[in-house]
Structure formats: C-alpha cells, structure tokens
Length: 401
Image (cartoon, rainbow, N blue to C red):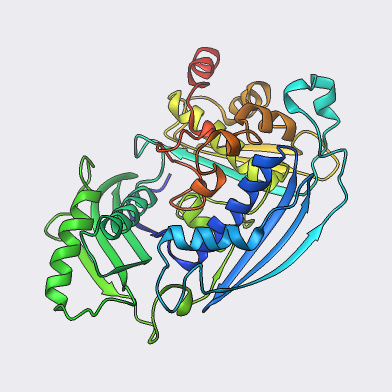
C-alpha cells in the first residue's frame, strides 16, 4: 500500500465535448432498449465544430430517429447558442441494421442455470473494479471531489448563479496522503469557458472570488478533508481562440474512461463504457467487478480492493478472477476470489438479470444509461445504481471472518 504521496484526478462537466458524445451514445442505447429490451446496439459519436457524426450498428425490431436523439441531448445539455446547438448542427449518420441474432434475444429472468451457461461471451474483455474506504461511496477521494466540483460548476450555470458559464468545464483535485490516508488538499483547479453569447468583462479577481464562493466552497461542504491556507486554488478560463465546447475542440465517445471510473487512482480497462448494450462484457464486467470490490470493502474485509475479471470469447464464465487488497486485507486474497466466484453474478446473463440492465432504461425517467455518461459510472449515489449496493457485505463478513 502506498504511504506518503500526492494524487490528482480530474473530471469534466456534462458539456465537455467528450462527455456530450458519451451522453448521445448512451441516449441512443436507452432509446433502443426502451422500445425493444432485447435489442443489440453499439453507438459511437464524434463532434467537431458544428458537425455531429453518428455511427450506429443495431439489431432490433424497430427503427428510431437517431439524429433527433442527438439534437435533443445537445439542447438539454445547454448548447443553444448561434455557433452550436441541436437545432443548427449538421448531423451525419452511418447506420447499419444487423440481422436479428437469436443468441442475443433471450429473457434473462426466465433462464435456468443451465440455460445461462449457453449464453456465451461475445467479446474479450479485461475488467477492473475498485473500492476503498476513503469516502462514504467507497471511492478514491480525488475523483470523488473532482466530480463534486464539476457538478457544482454545472449547477452554478444552470441556476444562473454564474451567468457567464458555458456547459464546457474541467476540474482537478490534488490530495496529499500521509501513511496511505487522505491528509490535506494540495491543489484545486477550475477551468471554465465563457458562454458565447455573454460579454465577459469582469476582472480575473472578481471571477476568482465568484467561482471560489459558488463552486469550490459548496463542493467541500461536509467533507472531512477541506482546503486549508496552503491549498493552491487555480481558476482559469479555457481559451481556444474561437469559443468553447464543440466549436473549439472535438469530442469522441469513450475518451474519458478515467473520469468514468476511478480517476486513474486504480486501474481501468481501456475499453469505452458508453454506447454499448448490456451484452457487451467490457461494459457490464466493469460493473460486476466494482460490485464485488465494493462489497468486500463494505464488509470490512479490506480497506482497499481491486477485482480483475477476464472474459474470453466462447466462454460463459470468466476465464480468470484476481483480487488485490494492497496489504490491507483481513483474509487471504485467494479466499476472496473464491467467494466472488461463489456468490456474485459473473456470467453475462447473470449480470444482466441481477442489475436489470435491459429494463432500467424503461423504468428510469429520462433513460438510465445517459445518466451514467456524465460524472462517473461507478461510485454514484444519486440515481440508484444497482452495482453500488452493499447488499452482499453481511454474507461475506459472516462467511470469511
């Protein structure tokens, strides 16, 4: 376990071009699953200036208006100005309808254990899940705080508290650790982008004071580690020379995997999480691994835990499971791995059924996967994510301690 060090994680607002692409891709996944819960779909999005490119492959009993979904997301995120908006952007599409695959079309709730074994892995994946006791959500403190700052930055714009903000923004938090535990906040960075229709003539000092009061202070409310007099706070305007958001820098689905997961404090797969239906093991395997790691930490079996699950094409169960507790575990890692294999959903059909991954888009107002596409796909406490439950902790504690 690391002892004395500084670790920094960053987050972005929902209007950052990469996150805008993630939300569009997941909104497309939501729409397909809302209409056909057994649909298969992969959706990629790229944005540059006023052009939105959508590449979608699907197998489903329906057709949907894919460009209209993208336009709605762009407007809802807050891009409504003359240079870029859902109304005026050019939407280019490459849409491929695939033959319906009977192997994909199954009712997971009706499958017996033997029938689940017949649902094979369709893509190789090396999935990581992590948890630690640094925060109530069992997430590393740097990414937890970076997300809080990003949310506060977006909220200041939405409420009109800071009227000159555009949807595009970035945050960063550096945490100093002593003996492996968060000790103090070393640095805070807020990067904001002025709205294209706002004539920003305020002094740097005035902006620094406003964003410190409306963004930084609220983000650290009720946090045990807060900025002190030595904390370096940098508030800077993002300047590209010709605007903000997609008019200034491009976006692409799946380019913010560290923001989606653990802020690089722990390992994550290089595969994108957004834009994929629940049959893709590189997406749902990451959720299953987080679920296992979180319950191990919630059970008090370790202060830090990483679970690695490897999937191989043609198998129904993982090819391997590894557990690492970084010297903080109370029981052997081999026993933890065996408990995961015994008690946790690991086969694709099991994961889909346990987390209701095909049903949630219809049950959650506004779609489920789109909500995951900004501010993290793990560690969330605001939208009732099923893999964030600690419902296996008591069982693990009783069996292993």
